[in-house]
Length: 405
Image (cartoon, rainbow, N blue to C red; front, side, top):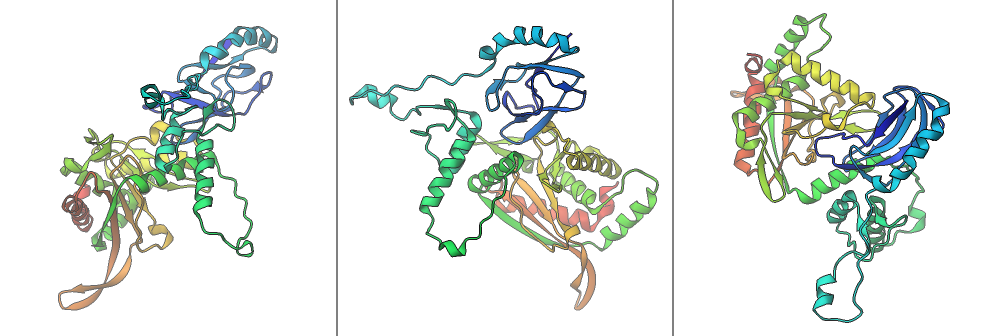
């Protein structure tokens, strides 16, 4: 029996993708759950596992070839003697599966109106990721020739941008440069591209407040004691997430983002949180945080963080989101400012909770405090709106009982 393998739709907005690596070759035996190939999208690179056991019969798409989601790109058969027949059936699907680039534009040799109309069209077509990267890095696609094939890839844009940056940079004495060869993973490259685009395109502004966390520390200790034996442990991160969700719920105008020159409103309150693994930074998104209990938030955070460490997060679990929380308190960081996670318009950064000198009346006292900063997209929100949002978070954390009522 033949089992079709299709280009998966890993996220709601994904319409096409390319195989970056095949981990099995035609004729190889494969078990259900083994990684068959990895898919490259404009956000991340994700591994795809086999859904059945058997033998890889054929692969119709070469690495880096773009195909629409749902397209048959390979086949797995139950028995080894079925490989040849299945491969023959799939052999004719290669041309239909691949999204062919358009023909190169012919340029007239003379001037005139016709030349003006065709002037400026790239000679080679580009992948959606390459086009977006070219806009972000200010790379001109005209005259750019792909290193492989007939379609401009993201690697081609990176190559040209690096060459331009090197040409523009001042010369550095060879003795001052230490050789360093770091292999950049596809996931790290995708993250770098997204953060570069965010910092270049979204005009950030920053706000910060100091929060008296005395009641928060006491309440969190009570919650931990109350849920002993539960599989979820409530942390300060869960309180920060609930405070953000309550503030977004009370201020719908803040629960918005910028897209294609417009401010769009979100219909739910979904909040991402930064989850650092040994290899990579992920931002899984907890859905409908405002509707979850504190314990429910903790359970979902633990579940998603576990999938991040195991490398099992899906693109759908990292899409969207109203805002992001980045908490570095566990690393003894007092305060920091974070870069927006596009297309979100707010990211909240929290440091460690520690005893600090605070003026109480006319005297100094040692109080538990935490510094919270917000990075905000100025295209979407102005200073007053951002200040109200951050002030409300401060109020809720200083009266944390409001978050569990």
